Image (cartoon, rainbow, N blue to C red; front, side, top):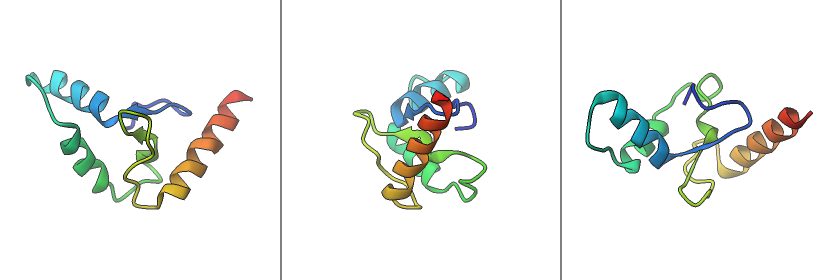
Length: 81
């Protein structure tokens, strides 16, 4: 999650593919990534709000989907300046 650029997002599946490639695995499930993201206890430092569903859905944020949306909008607005 630390490699996701400010103002950008990645899907759980994209992260799963990258992790599998780095570990030399044939694949990894997006659900496994979701489980790991869900256990992120330091979301202010590790930006888990930048991880979205395959269809762009704002899923799975412990702080609430409303906060996730606000954080993404804030980053989008600030990166456009």
